[in-house]
Image (cartoon, one colour):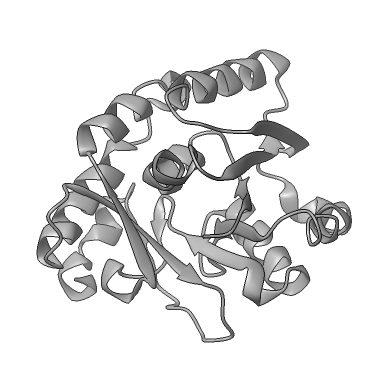
Length: 217
């Protein structure tokens, strides 16, 4: 695995949702930096969310926590600045992780599209967040872990209590069992490519989306 890795995190909680086991596995032997791309407009809420993230990841080995401070929910209006930031990463890291381009969350989608256009595909790796942008069976590689650890980390995000973040773990367990993995929590990753991604990914926070789960598996 590459020696210096950057995780592009749209919002605090995506690092645990999509990459907890990845960091858990590679952190002790690899330099991993987290970049929080957006920030709440409210200073109080921003502080709370970053504090929650710090607690959620305190058992993981992370080299640096960095912040770009683009406004949460409004990344689309800062595309030029985002492009500039993104191009600066090229020579700093061997591998850069971000959501896949078919992620439907607004900030995630903008981040993924800019990364796809600005970062060499040989350095770009896609992870799944609250949108399952590709089935686990289509992952280029997976990282297995314990669901109990991931659930415990997610419980620190009290400001996001209205979101069913635990659904991510539940669905991961179901997918893992269906695909024949022994671990009860599995994260999937795909190397970036020009191949078209599925236009209708699954939103794990939406029961309406999960109606299609049977076809997805």
